[in-house]
Image (cartoon, rainbow, N blue to C red):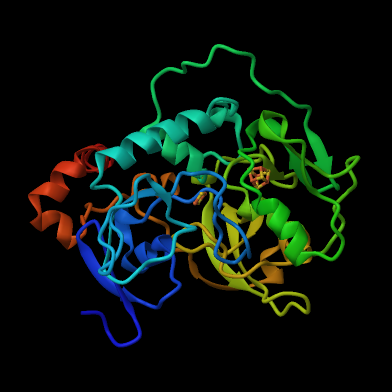
Length: 337
Ligand code: SF4
Ligand code: FES
């Protein structure tokens, strides 16, 4: 029985009580670990985000206590709210794993495999997904969509070839800035991010499009090609900023601050959006009060050569079925050790 006023949901065999209205994705995030579905377009701080990329698909094997019928198709976990008694499968469902492979293949149809020269490499969720689910070869035989690079103001560059049309940057522009100069034009495979005749998005919070972009389509021109992220050392720092919280991550190479970003949580979302002044104009250690080294996910390349022993969630260790469903992930982590 769920706690009073809460719904009980079971995800990959792990049960928890959540508030009504919670999405399956957010319920999984409360559990944490490998069972959290990947999310390339949903961003909890951006209203209306989600429902675009389909990477978060899960299987609802029991609809609810009242109506236990399974849902006939896989559902987007970022857009589906839990019902009391719902049972969900993510990594324990071969159907989900298979569908995710298909989604990754589709996202990579037009996305160039230029990770070796892309500034997002090492922090790119599509790179991680490609590594986990990607096929060795493409089956796509047609010409790829290609675009010229566009400068959005003097600090941000848009490289549409890499865009997966997640709309996060559009929501940032709509929700954090005053004038709307940026959006998606055309439809279907003609869709593209446009700044309407390449207007510079000149606004104090527009730099956040760089942090929310899950791939390397929007990059920081003050950092472009300066270094690979895994050679840099992230450090938490703050300053007294009149426009934003001033809480950031400084990325050091030696004694030089190469870039400044918002602080990100384990789901790759920023804790707080930061202003352009903090991001682009404060690149001296003297501008900041340093706090501590940024905790880095042990599976991230930024943690290169510092991998700790993998500790699978207790439920996976105890359950033979979950172990069988996680064979690939366990093998990957073994390789990384
Ligand atoms: S540019 Fe980046 S954030 Fe914007 S829609 Fe494309 S992938 Fe998403
Ligand atoms: S994160 Fe759910 S559809 Fe993209």
